[in-house]
Image (cartoon, rainbow, N blue to C red; front, top):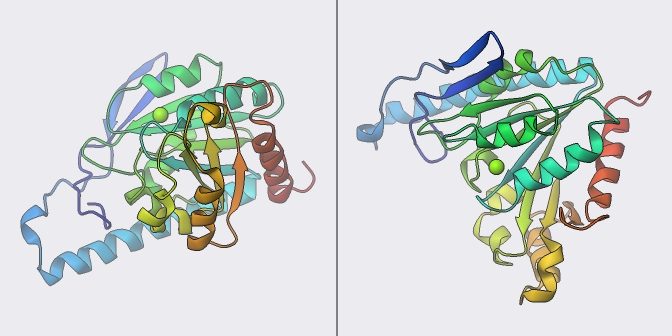
Length: 261
Ligand code: MG
């Protein structure tokens, strides 16, 4: 169950795309439905238990990433902000330079993981079923499938949702929110939990700005109202140098994680 919205995450599956092993396994084991338990104090304690369990696994993930010098980045946004396109373009550039791997979260389908694998990058798809976010246990279970070497970059594309993913620590080093210029400038004010949780906001699809009435300065001001210290980069996945600031950011992130890298 999601401690944020109360959705039932039962039935999440993880795709294991190795040649001899192409099928889905159940994840989690919270095979119960709490929709009828509202106002029951037991629900509150159950949520606290679930979040405590998540945090304990997240701490394990974080320790593993630190020990192995892995840059783990949790990418979050509303549906359609361009997470997968940005990732595909990033991987086309980064895959020859650094070891990279991707965990894809969606409620259904393996389409995004297939797009990633088409770039020659290892990817595991997690389908959350009725769930609205990835949790730390899903990451812990998916990681061994990827064989990511030490010093690599792990991109985690969370389920497209500006609410619940913000509430679940995955053990990542950085949380990144992608806000596209085809959305509203007021997104940070409407979903402050997400923007407050993130270290970096990528303003995506900036190549479309000439065709839009969108005030990027106002979006950035709104994000800084919610989180004054948030980093902000304007990017485009569709222009030749449109992702350069993001690549510089990742390079610095990699140095921060393993100074010798
Ligand atoms: Mg996607």
